[in-house]
Length: 191
Image (cartoon, rainbow, N blue to C red; front, side, top):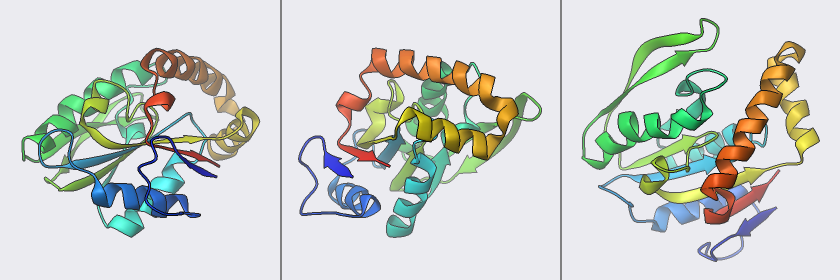
């Protein structure tokens, strides 16, 4: 199901990726010269899948928030890291560089270079949360029922990660509630 939260989606779009691409094609950058598309929502909702589908329509780079979270307790910090390391440099017309989090080693890993681009998809929890949200021209919220999301996450990560998932879900509720993330979305996609 696709629902336009602001009515900015021209025409009917049974394909959510097509709806996101339509918004992106008419969007103006919020800051600088890069149109940023944020695909946000709770874990296991289908953000990565949607972002990859949108990438095929728009042929642009994707930054995954999973690379920016500083561990299982780092959700709140990620939006600031995204803004400082990726979105501010791009808004200034410069290349960006960010540190990738190594989930297995529980530490920062290599630097990832991102050349300046006129169009960027940022996918993952907190991708449209402030302060990063100040740069996001198209805000997409992806959601699914709690049980569906939990099943997807455990299938992807394994049963051993269930306690981490539950801890992460509590952080999501707090962050998204305080930020009003869903309410600010231009498009809501239910998977």
